[in-house]
Image 1 (spheres, helix red, strand yellow):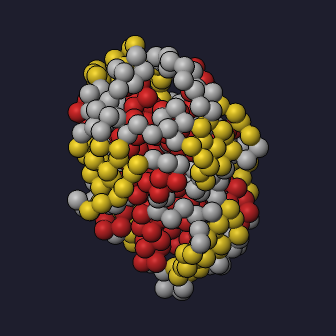
Image 2: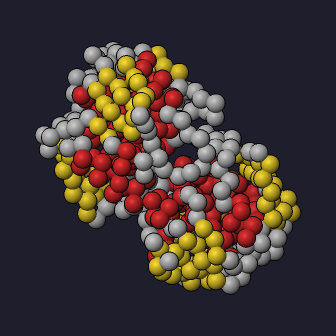
Image 3: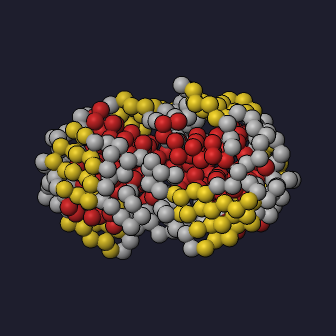
Length: 421
């Protein structure tokens, strides 16, 4: 198992490239199960989660080649309809094979999912939507058993207690592409990753309207065909890199970052006092020596502030003098990083879905442990500005969602090394 050793105090400088979106790629890979043809997916990030999904697809009967950020994938004629626990337990997004398997083969057995420990994330919206399409569903012994004579379009409401669900929207949308008739998804997720999946399906021959809005209409077709497609840049990696530049008071051009996917994050950074320039091919973070202003954030479904950037912003709050508050409305228990930041001298107090941060002048290095993917990123940012050498252990979480983040930061001048624990 690896750890990162970070010596803080360096202002980052230079240019860094954003990888393709993990949260787009994984459902898109699942969608390749909807066709018997070859698909080529470009700008695929080289991540632990990417490899995990490809291993699952190979088990389900697909051959693939992954090279130079391009995946070529095609069914080999030995298709299976069971996604075992050993694959699905490592990554929540792999549950997205349920919709395509049902749509293509009319039955599926898929393990209940795993992934980061950031609070309860039920799959009830997935099952509710697929049941409305005419699926008989049973949950037993840790598996979802689903079967249908044929899927039939329906009017489906997918709102949940914490808003819309990206994965549930994708799962139901994929299933509906080969269903009979028309499906309308109300309270659909509006995230760019849902739009990316929809456009991939449209290119395959699906008939979808309204992607990017709370109401998506899908008219079923008889079959889908293989395509070439390029995945959008990863807005959460882009936000993390922008944050790394801002928090170290550096000057960095984040190449490939799409400002139109990151408006809530960028507006909040401007409120803090960070200077940004939006360019055609990326975002330039300008060096600033002004005092950061305390601020509040409320995580919400897109286009609101993303929960996946909450931990990174908590680190910024930690060194912003004054009182800042986070209200977590997506995953109210997503505060596993609080204790670790406090080990570095931060003054963060959790009150239910709220985190109250009393900012200090500087964090101090300490050995810390990553609990989940985005918490890992928050702790790396803390290491970049802390006095002394910070050791971040259990960074396999980080490798699930960031492609060589330590290498990219090192290119920008960070003093960061990977070592064995």
